[in-house]
Image 1 (tube, one colour):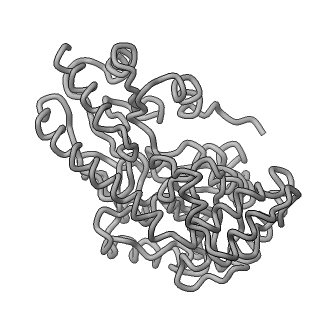
Image 2 (cartoon, rainbow, N blue to C red; image 1 turned 45 degrees about the horizontal axis):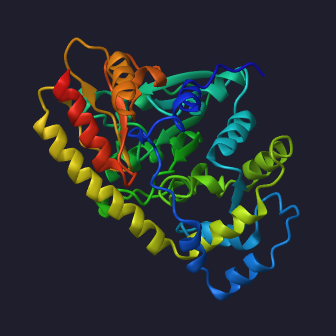
Length: 371
């Protein structure tokens, strides 16, 4: 396989641990290890204290798969496959489903591997562009019009990174209904599921929508545990999951045994874990609303509907790449220019899941007061 460099990850490799304030982080402030262990029930605490550092089951610990399955309405534990993060799940699924002669449709801008892996596997990929003029809304009619007889996969990330887009229930039903009728596989990238800003907007999970629906989940975003490197696919299509499991034999084979037990503890206490994430996010989003209202002459702002990220636009003649470079040098605050997502124009990703956002925002405000 020959695959293009992952621009966003190369950018973070340069800056993520070299700056004081990561104002473009896609995740929520990491959950403290000590606090997580305090949440363990008797069974999980025993699994942790008696853990031996050998291999775990390649499909994932049975108790973990059971807990993941409970996140969905109709998924069974053997309809869940655990991976070392969402990235591995994307890589395996794209390689299993796509190859020369196949076509896929992927929402864009977005996480590069969602389309790049399929392209590297030989597929033709159409990017379904979300547009600021439409409030970043998913255009179901336009997406359906891009489907072809050779379309094997449609990928929609919702809540969406980087825009915070979240389709309406009607849009979701229209899309999944059409894909079901056509027998097209559907990957719902749901890594920000449970971080809807209005919980009544939470969509039916992809895995629950129709038999070819596939849900992608991870501990990194909503659950604030990126360091565990635990993700999963859930689907009623057991044959597809078996093919992904066989492909996974050439990647990690199995995940980290300690991480799986820690993920189990977190998911069994998900109300408390997610409540923390939502509190951090809601507090910070209120600050961003005020900031962008005050500086409407400098920035365009479409308020996100879900997740801990948004995609504002720098107004004026200065390029966002220049602005971000000067900001990080002057204040130690990092933004992610849209160029790192291959997106033209002056948009940038801002993340509001970190606890130090008030300080980072104050530094950004001080910077724009000088330029």
